[in-house]
Image 1 (spheres, rainbow, N blue to C red):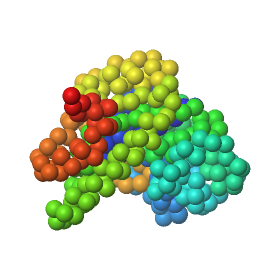
Image 2: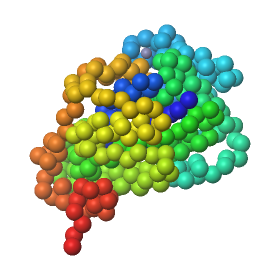
Image 3: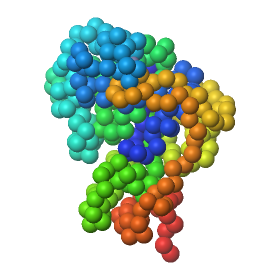
Length: 294
Ligand SMILES: [Zn+2]
C-alpha cells in the first residue's frame, strides 16, 4: 500500500489540498493520522463521527489491526512522544533517516504505524492513504514502516498568509506582543519548510496553496503521476468531498468551494507584513512569492 504524506504548516492550506486529493480513485484522505495516538485511545475517546473509537467503522478496524500485531494500543502514545514528538520535529527529522538501534519505542511505533495505515486502507477499501500530519520527522519515519511505500506532497503557502491566519486564532494582544508572536511564527514557518525541502524530490510534489486553489487539476495530475495512478478529470467546484473519520475534532463539511484566503492583506499592518516578509524573504523568493531584488 501507499501513503501520501502531506508536509506543510498549520493554517497552510494542507487540509483542503488533502481532501480534494482524496477524490483520486483508490485513495482516501484520512486527516492527521498521528493525532489518533497523540491524544491517546482511552475508552471514552470518540471519533469525529461521534462514535466511540471502538465503535467507529474506521478506527475500530485500525485498533483491531494494532492488537493483532501484538501491540497494546495504550503504549503507542508514549512511543510516539519519544520517537517523533511534535516539539522535536526540527531536531529529529535528520536522525529519523539513520538506521535505528532497535529500541522498543522505535520498533513498537513502527509496528503500530504499519498496522494503523493498513487498517485505514482496509476500513476505507483503498490502496492509498493520505496523511495530513505535516511534521517532517513524522514523514521521514515512514522509511521505517514496513509494507508502506511513501510519497510526499509539500504544500507551501505565503508566510504572511499563514502567520496572519495563525494570529487570528489567538486572543487580541498589544502591538508589541503581536510582533513578537509574528516573529516566532515566521521562524517556525521557515524551520518547517527548510526541513520539508530535504526530502528526495523523486518522491515529492511541491505545491503552492495559491496555485492549487487557482488550478486544482494540475496538482491532481502531478499527484497521479507521483503515485503511478491513471489521470483523473476533476469537475469544477463546488466539490462534494467524502466523509473523513477525523481522529480528533468534528468531521469537516462535505462540500467546499476553492476560494483563496486573502484576508491577510487587510489583517496585517504594514509593519507586520514587512517584518514577516523580511524574516522569510529567501524562502518567499524561492517559492515565487517575492521577486529577487536586483
Ligand atoms: Zn468515525
